[in-house]
Image (tube, rainbow, N blue to C red; front, top):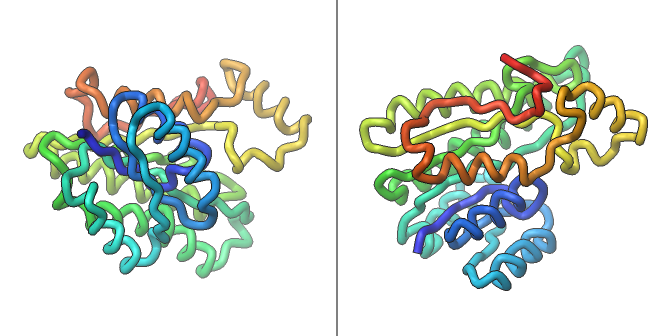
Length: 241
């Protein structure tokens, strides 16, 4: 049975990715940090479809917890797809950013991804695929999310470097950079703000978690076998680097 490990797989984009990869035939090991109920609901939905799934509590900023995750029997049997999706986004004006804010965000978004990779790399199967969820802000920056933007920029460059290193082994690493996606990050928008975002996007709509999950499915499959080290912007035309 092929196995996919999805960090932050219990909510938002991660939940959509978990369910999509399950429909593609992977059993799903997903992680969560703060709330077990959404993750268990995703697990139940996947299991009801006839695919096995399990949720594991893991704070990716804690090397000991990540090391424990790596001892899970499914990890030991081999990971075919690794999706580094977890993240945090605290809206802090760039001019108000303090070192502790930067360190906290980098610890989760960048260092946490590295810790998971480092702990599980020996379990990656031949021709394993790694999908890293970045952000358009990792390229364009953000006045109210400098720490988030910096962490996603670091994550993207690290992933592209890793792609070059792993390519001779047949393993592929790609980055997906979403734009506006209908997740908790946008949940505080007023109707007016929501309408403004939709108008800003050339396709005139906010993206869905399933929009991102579909690209992960493509990158995890054989039809993308000649793609590695790419940053794929999925944003409805909002940002064209």
